[in-house]
Length: 389
Image (cartoon, rainbow, N blue to C red):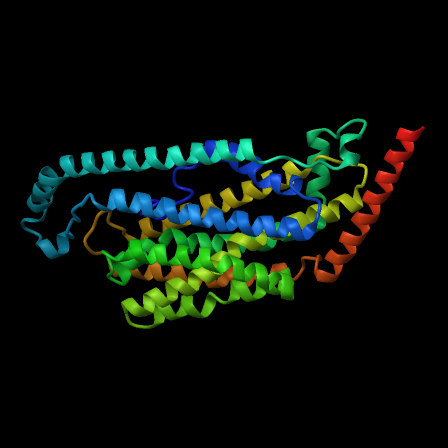
């Protein structure tokens, strides 16, 4: 079966349920560290910059540790010869499998220990160093709405559903690209010894361009940033499969893809607080649903990751993918081209089409901000009046 996503280290590959216990409250804290839209947008930009930087660090650590272990590839029986193919395969397995698999297992355990230690350190810094700021109206609410009532309200909020629908397809597009790019570089392009550096180029490009997208969305609006950011990857995704294999072009495509990955990282999380503000205006007496918004947003992100992994695994398996093969059949190379180019392009276009239905543009956002300020002022006046009485 095909290797897991991001062979040199993925932010999804080892996460599991433990990450969700951290990721949901960590993401939801954005709504509790400030009441101002601009400050929340700025905090989201800093958060996503550091998150992508952490992904780069994890990719580099695991890539360097695991990359030092040389796992021999297995030549296809077609090139070995029919008469002695089974003998050659058996000798290769007997000679290399035991030692190489043990070394690889140890390398992954060391990398997991280092990254796990960093994970615990960051969680401690977060829990000790961040303080929540709650609305006075929320603190004085008589009785909180139950989880299931809150879930029903959240799932009936049109702006939230449309935002999820748009980014569900664009997220799936970029996860398919991320999950298969290492195999594409290794087998289709023939850069077996370069794919780790290419993936690092993608993530470094994403890290450096998140501040650029933060400036762009404040200057031109978030919906415009979505259209420009997501669509900018399309010509480069087409270029990488149409042109002949070339290392320089591949690095250019990797850097360009990183720019779009930065938009995919930042914009969904930057727009979600706007949806929650819109929800508060429609349900002024219902409080404490931020965790529901963020938890289901995280759920759909992980859901797209699972769908991406399933699509990739099944497609490559049907195409005849050979694990640890020195080369792959033509059907596998064609499938990899589809998974990193044609399918992501189609999903991005579909996501952008659905995103046109998203109702919160910059004018709507400014009106919501003004309405929330008025609502907060009224709540403060009522609080002061109650304290005097």
